[in-house]
Amino acid sequence: MKTPRTEVVRLLCRYIDTHIDQRVTLDMLADQADMSPFHLQRLFKDEVGVTPRQYQEARRLQRFKQALHEGDSVTDATYAAGFGSSSRLYDCARQLGMTPAVYRARGAGEAIRFCIFDSVLGVVLLAATGKGLCRVALGESAAELEVQFRDEFVRADLMRDDIGLQTYAQHILAYLQGKSQSLDLPQDVRATAFQRRVWELLQSIPYGQTRSYSELAAQLGSPQAVRAVANACANNPLALVIPCHRVIQKGGKLAGYRWGLERKAKLLAQEKKNVETDESGD
Image (cartoon, rainbow, N blue to C red; front, side, top):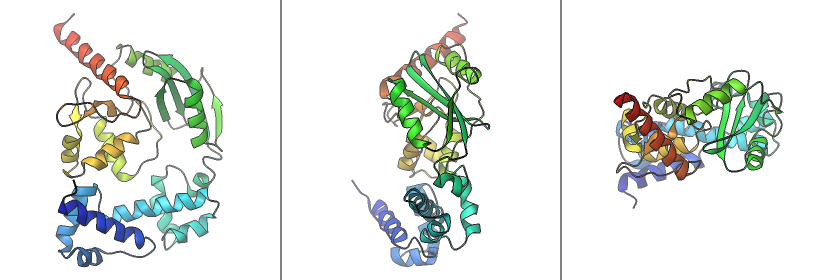
């Protein structure tokens, strides 16, 4: 059920979307909502998890990336998305995790190694650049995981390297076997500012504990941004390493796990059991 607050923010988002190539100020939005700029900013951030300006930048980046995928040049995509200059685009480009030109080529020029192995939770695909892990995915089929991975980085220089990535794989397996409670591994992932804040918060949840989506939203200072937190969890590219399985509904019910609720339940049960074993000294 939509609340009046939600409806106001929905209309503001629509306004921003239809004026994506223009400068939209807080005063302009305040006029649309018939409230003060201060209260509008606070309401918007509570509901969406980011400020109106951050929302518009994210939407511009989405349009920019879509234009690149459709074959536009970087220059044409830059101005079509509403970036007034290439410098403004590059200020936001860190959210892509790679330069706009490389993103247009869907990873062209990027060297990414990957490996696939079996675990107690099924098949694991692990991939890394020279900077760190860029993908950890769980599934039932090695072939399906590889197809999905190759489709995302279709023009990158992909190389299977089971031996070279053995150290990463051993850390993952040790964790899944209950022999390790930490996965403090280097990462190289693309993220919006809000996603990065959520993912960092997820990594601060102690092993064997859980948090609700609403608790995380409150910790971020945006108690109404529960849906935004859930979306950030759903877009987590590093299963286990960024432990989104430790996030549950407010009433304790399991919900929304990208790699399956059965896996989420097994992970939480194992962590709880290992903590209880450590506390008992057995």
